[in-house]
Length: 147
Length: 415
Image (cartoon, rainbow over all chains, first blue to last red; front, side, top):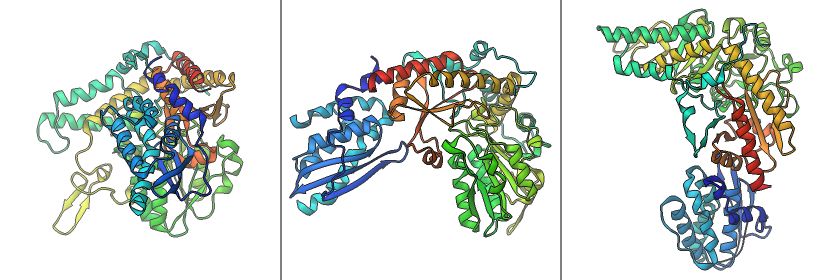
């Protein structure tokens, strides 16, 4: 194994292949599209809220394994969490990928550490960030309204 | 058909001319398969640029001293070499630009916006790089001209040559067409297209970014009006390229950029402009780049562009045969290697092109992944992107073997 192969850790590949949360949601309260025009990643997030709690979050779209695995991991981590928790997790994921910060994820989100290796490949950081950046827009717009 | 002068290239000897090829990438032997994006540079080109900066450094034209005069001579010689490369009738038909994109923009601004009228038609194709579509969309917007497209064969295996003529109308004023697709390597029948265009009084611009570097091009024999190409895809420096234009057209056009060097006389309220080619070269040009480009013209002509074309053809046949022997590769542009340059675009099973590219990278294989500045063609192909391996004179079979070894690694990880 080497650096490149190593990036594709089992957790990332499992999330990419599992597609547990990869589906459109008909009764979503919010849907939001996000795209990376330079590489063609194109996803849509669907969120169903109960007050400020995310009851269900799913995604659909096309993208590379890093992008889609990251979206699947986001859904796994945030199902049942509040918008405030989602926002805090976004900050941690971003600083893990763009600064040198060592993440300190809560137990329910510890799988996200598998994405740390992406940092070594700057062109792929935006793939890993796409679902999270899209989520941040949702939180920014709806966090205040329900909060 | 390779000409009688075609010789097998001594690739292993040629490779020693390119310093980057002696470097490892990700700790592996570098298999550079991205020459469609930019070619590697040989010692002679690097030396020519360095010698200018080290020994002269002076600006060209009006310097009244030896070093400036010497720099001017080298700059002019580069233009003569570029004109010779494409058999232009005169060196003044060669305008130095920053590259293919700027060359096409120059024609868009100085010819398109001046001469196109509402309802006039610009004929192009879905094979084009964005630089040969977006410019014309903007010209159409500004002038009221209309963009039309040549019909394609199924699966984008080429232009539908039976419908070439039908694509023209009485209003066709410009054909803007690639000499070779940067996605599939397909080479449209430029000579025939120019014939049809000229029968109707239309002007022909060829995007030669992928063409001029891979095969001999003769603008007079092809009878084309404009040819745009870049030095950096043919062993030369980045930041310099050529617009070839038929003299009568260049004369009729207005300048593109205004300022120093392109004027004849300047008063407070008006100016007159220089003759060709200075009319289109405002400001201090990329002198070192032009001199390096001149060295690149010498280099590719020494190697022989017919030899390069034959070598790439042989590599493409080898590559396609290896791909066809597997069940996990979709080839774009067809498997016919006629009318094709050394470009191999594919997808690997249902794995995203960026994942393929990234694993290949970790094996020392440099490819390009994505839509290759050709989104309209991606739509025709029905894909978000492809992985592209592209060849040049220094590419050898071990590079292609490394590609397929890398794909075995992709298979292990993803399938």
